[in-house]
Image 1 (tube, each protein chain N blue to C red):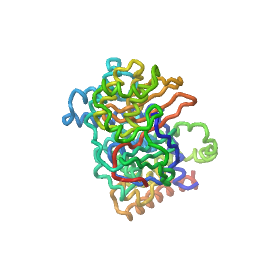
Image 2: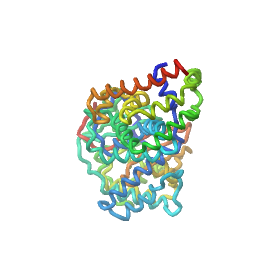
Image 3: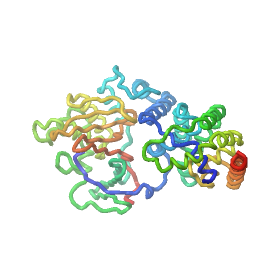
Image 4: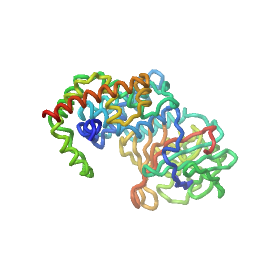
Length: 256
Length: 190
């Protein structure tokens, strides 16, 4: 055994406790936000800090913070999100920590997916759908920006009495579709008032919400209210599956 | 979430390195938290690691505009920041080394049985090794531990610490010579 191996043996392999990562992330983001306070709208930022600043404690739900206020804070930041500028709408996700999936969609309907650097063209239908119906980017972009009108429009596309589907269709507008900032903001506002959406509290880097699909599957979304981005989506059944969002937005960089 | 079904694999290594925007920063945090935490916990003890790790990532976030993907990997860059912050806790590091010399690190998790024999053979030299490490010049120890614990290349260490490439080699060989001298003495006379 050489001296470097002896050094490694001496130090061993410490392992953080399972909550350490979430604690450190909260501490980092809280301090980032404090520095940025002067440039932000104060009430929103204050709410975000109240949520996120729980240093060195296990993740707990702040009792005075309601899920509704978290979603409304997300709506406010969504409204000022980046405009739909760029040639391609792009989303990159990782499933269960290993499988990476990517999608690029151009405004003219062309779309590509990527597999190990091998890009293939999507040839059948639109890459976007809602309750089984294809949607073009144009249709998504022209959805109403008024919460009540958006709710009505989305509900009209769904089968009647499908509890959970409305929440799911609306949350799809938040991350799997190229929705304009005003539509994302409206979707957050509608979700904030849906009784079937429950708030689970802080989770990892964000705030967790869940609803039950008609199939009985419980779907949990973790969102970052400060950026309004959806960070991950987990389905409870058949076995828990998580998709984590790495990038989502418009870009000029095409499929590669 | 109804919608596209795409389930294909892209190896992480195939991803082009990019500048650090906010999302890139979150991704770098997720990717490297574990090993940066382990490195800081090794050098400053598990009880003190979280504060320094948070400081490391906060520093990285504030300086992200200065990060140049063409010069260093995010990983090496984070190790450099962590190492500089560890340098501000010299007494803590000395105390951690004394503790390591006395009783050794925390027991490893299951699945590491293969290293038990090796650990036992090294056990008798723990106090001497820890003392030798504590006596090294801090800059020499930084380089030695970035090689031994982080597995960084000379090139990466030069960029991470902002020192010339040749200096990495000379600090490393000085550190190893001192360790070997101390341990050799023990092995011969001890």
